[in-house]
Image (tube, rainbow, N blue to C red; front, side):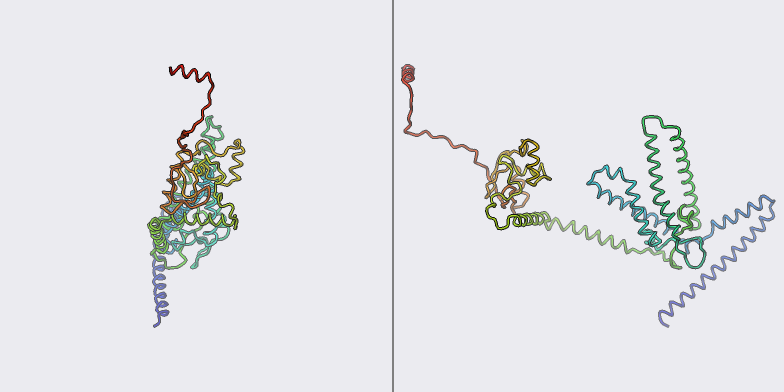
Length: 427
């Protein structure tokens, strides 16, 4: 017997066992229903009708034909995975928007959630009839109104209403609560209409919470509809296969572990490689390439090809660059200096304790020069004034005045009155 024949035979055996179990369950259910009907028919007029209605409602709630089998844990896990995915995307968007100001992320948080929920709904439920969490649990949405051995996909109107209520409804409810909070949070007493609207909103929220809790209790019994919205729209999560395996796939978890180990290895390896050294080397090479492209073969501008070569001699180029990191172009700096009276720099950027770079001879502050040279680990630093590579510095002696010497043959011119006075004083 080939493997294909063996699989077909096993499938036939499973189908027969399932048919026998269903037949036995239907017979026992019919006996219980018949007994309950006989008991309830003996009751007086109002009670027999109510008892029959209650028994039918209980059978409907107790029925366990929800997801073939009722995989309740998978449905709840799918909802939790969807919420975790939304929180993860929200944090990533917040990290991306923090450079535009923290107030942007706080003021537009509702709109950000609206866009994320709409994108997830379009890419998951609208296109594939399953959210990302449900896909991980091997579940998909089906139309519970159509009975039969085959599962029916949700209709377009069911998806439209699901997206409108789950995405737009949440956004509208959040904005409504925010508006009520703003109206009640003022210093003045809120108007009677606002107070009545607040009471109505609280009553609606309480009623929705009670209905959602009751729906979830019923879901734990029969495993049909996970949320209240699914129950209203007759949408349920079901497995596309008749025999659902309860073994969860760890493929995504394995990928996450691999990437986590890879990132940990990079974080351990990059400090050993010296990424700052390579970055300095690349930035220096890029600056030299730009300088060569701009200058061409002109050798006359070698003395002033630095980024801040136009600064006056009294200004420390490093101090100026640290205080003005964004305006390094000559046109921008000249425009700023023109607005401030034609003065470039300030008292905070003047050179203090000057030191001379070797071999270019440009002057910088002692602290600035030593900090830049120490940060290069002996590889050299590109001078901001001349663009040369410097590795050493020494004290600047340009402001040291030599002692004046008196010549031996010195001529002196004086008047006679002065000579007489000197003689009297000496006498």
